[in-house]
Image (cartoon, rainbow, N blue to C red; front, side, top):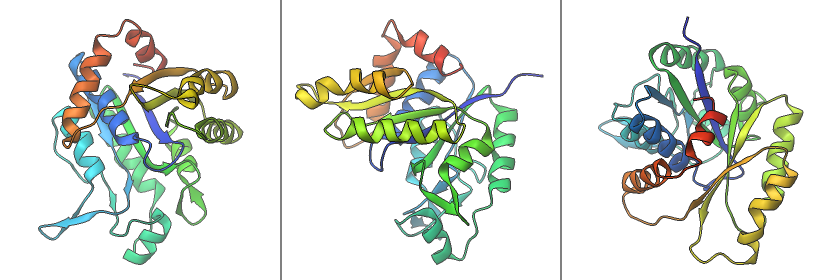
Length: 240
């Protein structure tokens, strides 16, 4: 039996670039010939198209690997841009971890590697007192923590990693996303401090990219990573 491999992408906060990082890694793997699946189990703040709620995060993940969004890839799409537990309540939906696990298992049986993107950070409530961290544990996936580079990120990243370790979650590493071209003192010092304090390796400091089209940003970052000498080491840390 082929061993199922994958990663659960979480963030230190909302808006740190989890989807860009997850999509970029998916695109990088595809460039390198890996059969890669993607999953966004729960999305809040979905908009309606042709009578159906659409997860833009799931759409970007799928664009990165050239597949269509399916029910297994985005099983819970919620209307309001609030915590998923509240969004689900407002939509009259109960988020069922066993349904998410079944969808993940189907994806894992089809692909060599599956990238799952969480919602917000680890402590975001999903259902009945269960958190995003509980979902990562249910799927038995190691974490890739996405952090921002600016002031406050050391505290947020160390707290995230500490919480993960207390809950028995394995951390594959940390990606610091969105480093400005001319970083200030806080940005310059953050990677070293995070690497020293959070008990997990910093697997990359990604440059800030700007653009209207997110898939173009993903393509640029994937090509940039593909040209970095240390990328092979990073992929091994991610279990590829």
